[in-house]
Length: 217
Image (cartoon, rainbow, N blue to C red; front, side):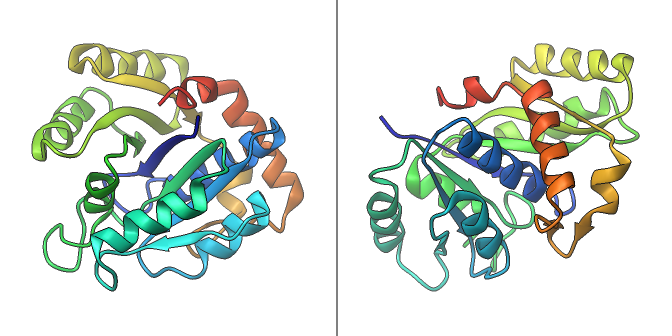
């Protein structure tokens, strides 16, 4: 059985690229066959996906292709994979015309669960209002959980857990602030040519994110 989910975020710069690539690397390390995809016509992220997964990363774009073609691409390239991970672009609902062509539209076309990566720096319970808006904005987009990025302390983590409890939203984990990873970032995300930082990210995700639970989506 092939499992699949889409990694997105409320805005660009939230950490979705780092989390998506890190999860791909972690799952490959665990012996899973991972098929990567990228929303939109991006050609940089797909190169990093391919380097991590050992398979070509496929663009899914409803601006330049029909919805039927997007479904066909996803089915064709994901047929022999254990898990398909789609990395979103920009914010979840950002498209070329309102939310047309957005990551949300891709998730709807593929009937795929969405995991939000949220930058929690300098915020706590205000996240409840933000996430509530995303959860109820479109009924055809299934946001199933969240991964909080840049969590500052144990108390901060507890406060974010309370947000998820009140919203009845699953929390898949927390990625703490880490200076080494921030210094190793480049345009559109982590530089995977730096092996030490790659391993650091994998270790952080393995310790702080329920990656096995993600495989049940």
